Image (cartoon, rainbow, N blue to C red; front, top):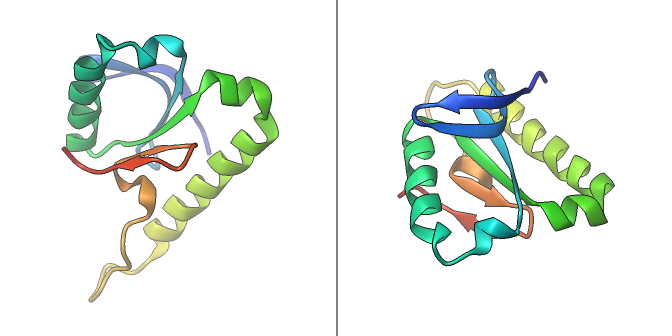
Length: 113
């Protein structure tokens, strides 16, 4: 899959974006855990989700500690999204994968706002 870096979506810029899957990958440093960022991140995430963008958040420290695992997780999310795209839209649809809203590599998932 092709990802572009630093892609503007609405008034925000995402770290990496795959147009075909509408998947954004965000690398989160320690500043994302600051108390003053909570409202901003919530608003930003909600706006991106409303635009149909799926988010995968990866903490920088996890990427530095275990980049192979991060790569495997990204591959798994891509496989889920490709599988979802290939599912016929006639009749019943399977449930959306956990990354339908926002998925963090530590397993925490937040849905639509």
